[in-house]
Image (cartoon, rainbow, N blue to C red; front, top):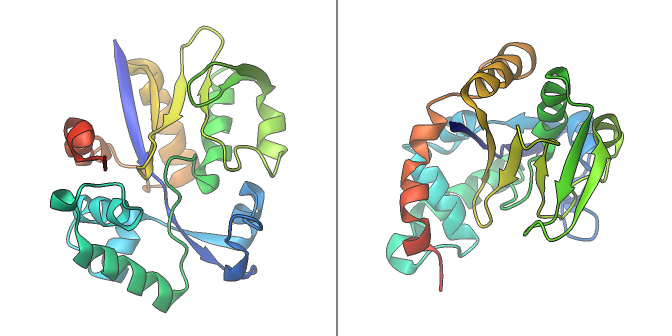
Length: 214
């Protein structure tokens, strides 16, 4: 049976790189994030912004990109996110794209499960390309501004992201999900990935078709 692990796209705090570069024409590559920025988790941002819950933060972010119908939007939280980012010079996470901070670690965990190669498909999987995982990790421009799906040769593992939302989804069987989660938590992320994220996003899965902007 297929299981799913949802993980949030973190906020970004530039350390040795200018905030001005975070624009479409000059947006940094994923390895620049790792070397020159600090990851701010959603849990940290809840405290920094005094936002009450993951649900409100999610709705606020989606409100900011005009991804919700008016009756589901939350302008107050949207403004709180904007004010906090401006005050602390943080960069908001990108929607619908793989999170730069996390991808090398996710790919490395997949490699440690015995997969040296992974398929990369476009948004609708009308085209696909076989990629060497080590090359993707080294490539600073991998995944830049591309809506992609990644999957292993026998479809044992699927990694995808949801358009207009600030989370990605790792799909596999229960045992593989548990192994990958264990690697990510204990070896790479400490406690930044939580199983409860799945519960946080139940409202998104349930309401997606009803709440997206027409």
